[in-house]
Amino acid sequence: MDPNTHTVELTHSASTSTSSLPNTPTATVVHHSSEKSTETITVLDAEKQVNPWDGYEEDEMPEKKQPRLVRNLRLQAFSIYRRLFSVVFLTNIGIFISYAIRGYHSQKIALVAVANIFIAILMRQEHVINALFAVACSVPQSWPFFVRKTAARVYHNGGVHSGAAVSGTVWLILLAVQATREFVQGKGTSVATVSLTYIVLVFLVAIVVFAYPTFRIKRHDAFERMHRFMGWTATALVWSQVVVLTNDYKGDKSLGHALVHSAPFWLMMVLSWSLILPWTKLQKVPVRSVVLSNHAVRLFVDYGPHPVPGSFQRFSTDPLNEWHSFATIAAPGVTGYSIIISQAGDWTTEMITNPPKEIWVRGIPTCGALRIVPLFRRVLFVATGSGIAPFTPHILSGKIEHRLFWMAPNTRATFGDPLVDDILAASPGAVVYDTRKHGKPDIVKLTNRMVDDYKPECVCVISNQKLTEKVIYGLRSRGILAFGAIFDS
Image 1 (cartoon, rainbow, N blue to C red):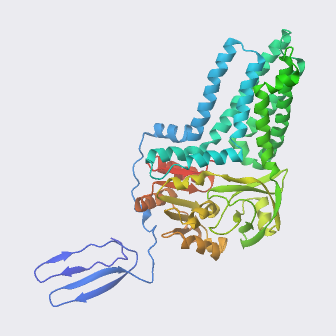
Image 2 (cartoon, rainbow, N blue to C red; image 1 turned 90 degrees about the vertical axis):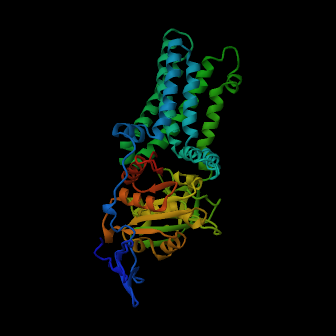
Image 3 (cartoon, rainbow, N blue to C red; image 1 turned 60 degrees about the horizontal axis):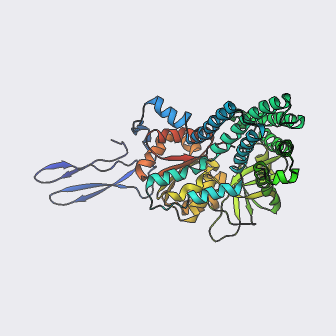
């Protein structure tokens, strides 16, 4: 029994019974008397609120659904992202073996290599990503749960990107071998084709190696610059490779005629346009900055289309060298949108210390993981710190039935009263856990309590990588549908 809960007896003239009421940390005792009985009713003190996390440490967690090996393989080793990667890569390996055995000539191999590079680039193109999300998120809430759950997996599309990129690099290896063989035998390829193939292969291997998660996370700015500049250079080199290889196999046709009838030529045309398109929308836009604290600043911009909830936009003060993505916060009935920048490095610190009056933007707002939220009827939002930003447009829209669990140190001092008030006003039953006051909780256990209480169809988590993966694994291993960022870029 909670020591702060007062228990009383209900006394009758003929018998005595004990009435049990829910425990509350604080209570006021109200006595009602009559000639034959005395009642004591436990009620919540109007001046004190019950913390929804009180006593959660004693909660019993549900058992995990599968044996440890099975769930670790399913949820970690073979996550949806990795399954998509594997499907793309293993399909390519099957075709690769077939081509290697049959000894197809260089032009056929080059077509498959370029096709994979084409897919890899398109799966990172903003308009393509938005189109994929638009189709997946058009599934109505009235449809069966398993259909909506499957549609929500669209945000793992990066698995196709990485699978195609690695596969394209493997195909370049086969192309280099075959082109060299043909050159040595004096048939097919020229020295220019062989040379360009090896140079492109070096560039693609470097891009793939530096995209490995360990390096990408530790040296993210260096990774982005390398990915961008080496990618552009490799694209130019592949163009040259397509031209000289087409020339090698054109026969008695003109080079122009051979090119316009060549599939790699048209794939490269679309690929190049998809790379150029975001840069055609490069612009410097005015900014209204509101410093929320020495840990966060809010930037307001007013240009272009109204972003849908769950979108992000890229910002920069040095367009050629570094770009930073932030969730867009668009309020209903208001033009433009805002972003929240939290202190997380030199660039963000500079933004907070010296808020800009103008900033560069590139491309269009692009759908991210939380674009899938409207697929579900009831959603539990779990955010830590500035992870509240991607949830905010959904909260302010008033269209999503949700419950918010926001864990952060001193939210009002960090993010300011206006933002916090707007969020809480639009989020009935929100739970704000101050880690500075209460310490760091067992977030999996606390989230599970809220799942038991609210009964959502799914849980969406936005936090740092370690915590996001911990919460999602902790929930999904117990049969609770959970989504969160996958940190693949």
